[in-house]
Image (cartoon, rainbow, N blue to C red; front, side):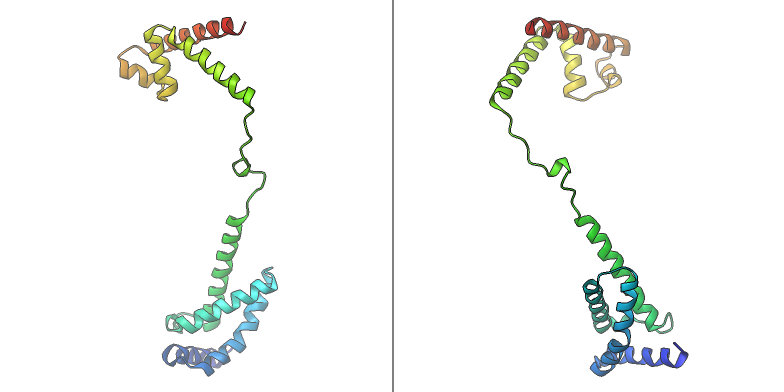
Length: 186
């Protein structure tokens, strides 16, 4: 494109911006639409998507021609940049719409069988009973570590106990729980 053509297109864009000149827009559309579509097809877009994107770019020209600055770039550069950015936006939206049917979060929750519910209730009752039989200090350490999610260091800081004492009380509690639960299941 030579300097004369660049100036002619800049003048036509100015006419669209200033007067909403339909004839100027038609000339620009006839010149740039096929070139934009051809470029988009080379970017591996489907023909229908390319046509739709060209329409969007030309609508931008119609509605926002006043944003075009001939001192900064040619009209061709401005339009192709808009097309490029819209194409990238379209690709990003398409990527976020693809769902993986195998994703566990999208699978229906399996119904729990009645016998499994009863078994879980029995197990929970056994665990509660075993925990209730622990000495108070061990029960508190388990509660802080597993129900409140505190680290051993946080428990030691909160209780004022040495870290080793916290760890040994938790270890002792687990040992007693294991024995109590094994005795219940036997």
